[in-house]
Image 1 (tube, rainbow, N blue to C red):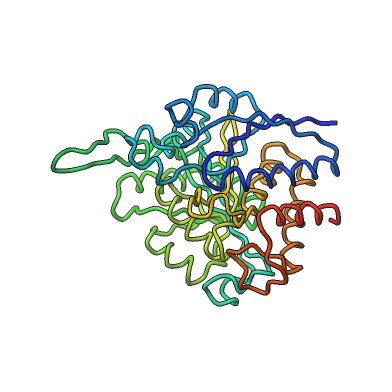
Image 2: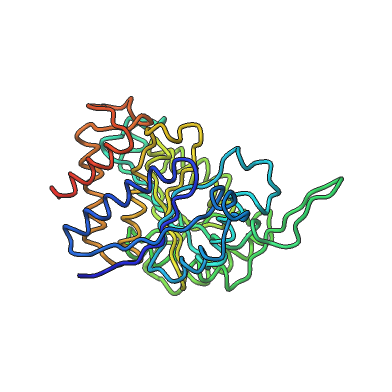
Length: 356
């Protein structure tokens, strides 16, 4: 029996609630498909600060580097907003991404047929949407130097090297070759020199992938096109800041941010997490949607652990659960047969996994 060693970071707010359900589904998949998951739990975020006075203990970095992959919930909350920026929970996540060198963030946005009415857009606009945003994760304006805040101004630097762009571009093109062979690179090359370089390098890399159709859009136009005609997109490739914004916009095509998983990969490690935040306003109430966390576990199985069969089965189990009318509160208005709490939704997906 294959054994996977997974570093588990439950985090703050609803993080522990949704990750517990992802564990449940992973363990059920292991029983069915013949693998075992061994979890080592670590702290990051506000809970880490409360215990260790740092949002990212060194033990967490070491544990994630030693594991086959890391599964993470969510961090943050108003409780820690008074702290200096370097001690806030979000700084811990940024530092972990940098330490693990997970430079490629993968965010799929797929509209489930059962939730075609959940989006605020018309069903004919969103039905059939199946796209993925490939976001550069450890460069750009979030990490560029110099940066600072002074009495009369504040400043950040958007910076990329050709090497950084090349490696994320190759990830995007590789994804496109396995999908519909279309890649749209998003930049602001009409204004920003860093985007001029981005477009030049992506265009150069595209020559290595002659079967993939490359197009370019400015980020302002792309944000409009995602709403106007989302089905035109297959793989979206973009920088850290633009990807942060566009992937959240794409998530709402599906109807709820509680449905969207993500994975961050590099040459040394991999980190998988739902794209939603810690939602402290609903933490502990048992109403959080665990689907994004469960699908993040499925992505981990597929992209890092290379267990495609189990990964696809989890996606199918989620789809079947939704088709049967089971809903959490955030999507309860759309053809709901029964409103489930967080625990019940995890149980149902695990049950339907047996039927795939």
